[in-house]
Image (cartoon, one colour):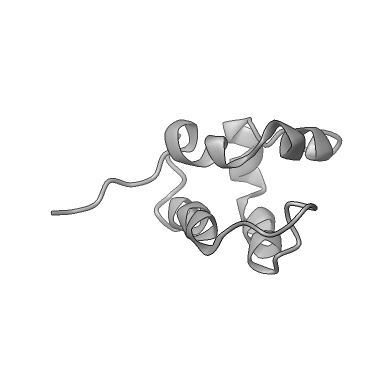
Length: 76
C-alpha cells in the first residue's frame, strides 16, 4: 500500500499555529499555499535547525511531515 502524499490544506497548514502565522506575516503568510510553497526550502532549513517556531522546535514528526510535503512536490 502506497501512503497518501501530504497536502498543504490538510497536512501542512494545520502545523502552523495562529501565533506562528502572526510572527511571520511581515515576510509571508504561513497559511497561504503560494507563500509557503515559494519559501518552502527556507522554512524547512529553519525547522531542521530548530529555530522555528520561536517558542520551541517542532517535534520530529511534524518536521518530517513538512519535509515529505516538500520532497513529494508540495501538493495543495
